Image (spheres, rainbow, N blue to C red):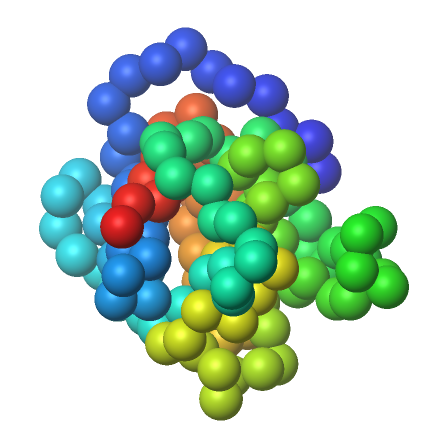
Length: 129
């Protein structure tokens, strides 16, 4: 599924990724809906910082860079980086990815469905330290 940017405005859905605490907080109109452990970039891998809007979503994406590694419920936000599910749940809460923001797959599905519900143009992904 390809998504295209809509005119900028106040985002109704915000996912704030805190790299320092390895958490993602999902808010709707400022109210916290979820707070989940994540894994961001391990040593030697960058998780881009900044404010982004999703531009592409796939229920199941196979990585073109990392041996077709499965990326369930992928919400792409910057070049090849995405928020997506993982089965490496023991590593959640620790920097362990190749740069993407990894979630427990059921949580990735929830986030994916929220982005679909509210729309990419109404969603903001903020990655900060």
